[in-house]
Amino acid sequence: MSSDELATARWFKSSRSNGQANCVEVAFLGGGRVGLRDSKDKGAGPAHVFTRDEWLAFIEGAKDGEFDLA
Image (cartoon, rainbow, N blue to C red; front, side):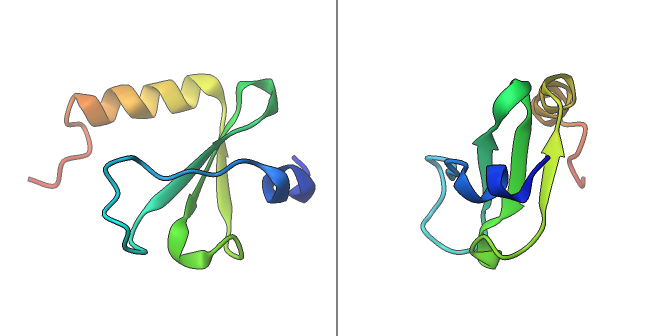
């Protein structure tokens, strides 16, 4: 993973974002990978990179309530 790929990636927030800085941004990268970063860092902070399968497992877990704090 090159830092250039992350720097030039097209990052976006959820359409449900309220415009505040408390969001995450996602970028679809080459090879089916997905990048995830904190929008507060304005691109200067770390990014987590997931394989396609890891990302799909995360999305399914979120839909199923696996990460709910309750």
